[in-house]
Amino acid sequence: MNTATHTIKAKKSLKFKLTFIAVFIVTIIFQLCANGLTFANEVSTNKTPMQFTVTVLGQGKPVILIPGLMSDARVWESLAKELQQHYQLHFINISGFADTPAVAQPSLNEVKTQLIAYINHNKLQQPAVIGHSLGGFMAFWLATIAPDNIGAVISIDGLPYIGPIFTQTNSSTVDSLAAQATQIRSMYKSMSQPQLSTQSRYGLTLQATSDEAQAKVMAMVETSDPTTVGEAIYTLLSTDLRQDISKIQAPTLLLGASGGFGEIDRQAAAEQLYQQQLQALPKAQLKMNTHSRHFIMFDDPTWLAKQVTEFLTESL
Image 1 (spheres, helix red, strand yellow):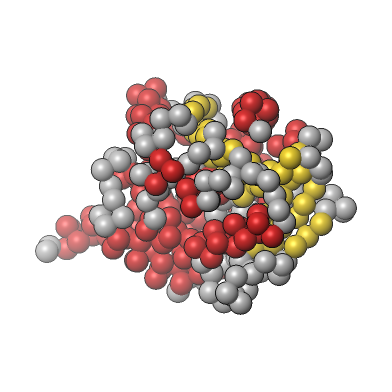
Image 2 (spheres, one colour):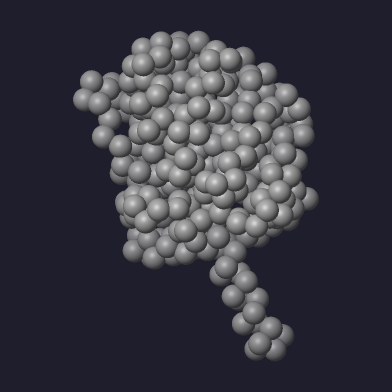
């Protein structure tokens, strides 16, 4: 291999790595109400530490809200104002993301298991699950493994399998991306927090439109744990739910964001890719926001609240 070819491949590899940071950066600091009830070590499974904390607010039918990578529950500030008068909101804070302290062995698999245990322990009757990005993937995951336990699924720019977002084709598989998944996990494990913050600035404009919103995104990144982030991305690249979602019994809504793509043909391609991911669940609804970037709650909170409230009213 000559030097020029090696340099080109190295640049492409770096670009691939940095893209992952861009897609998963999430969220904004939200001061939860003082009367919220927090659960920290209530339903740990197999004597392992809890992988998340929960703050509960309001009364009514239960709704679980799961943020994305490097984010915490405060990303739901604007949406919570619309929901808290009618629903009991369970805000999830995943350990190692934003201000929630990391655990020694972070695991999205364990988060999933503990969330099901949390639902059962607190006798939540078919709660709706709303998730953003990684949280949207988790909503799909919960509804596939415990279809009788989930009342509605709303994924905000989170897919059953994340790999095709980067390859731009739904022919991508866990096997075809296995090497990249392993490499990324190793890279994050050896990364310092300042390095995570520096790399995360690449592609920041794809996450939210305004400077203010982008600053809030970075505030979350700057307190996230690199090892936890790497483990989460590895799991997302190693877990393909595209066929498993056929098991979902709950009403399902996927809200996509294509405003960052600009050209109409690229937006149409993004919508097609999203729709293809739902082929195994024909009853699922897809709605695209062609103006918002990944953080729809920052770019178009009114549109997001309308879609969510209307869907919950029809589904629960």
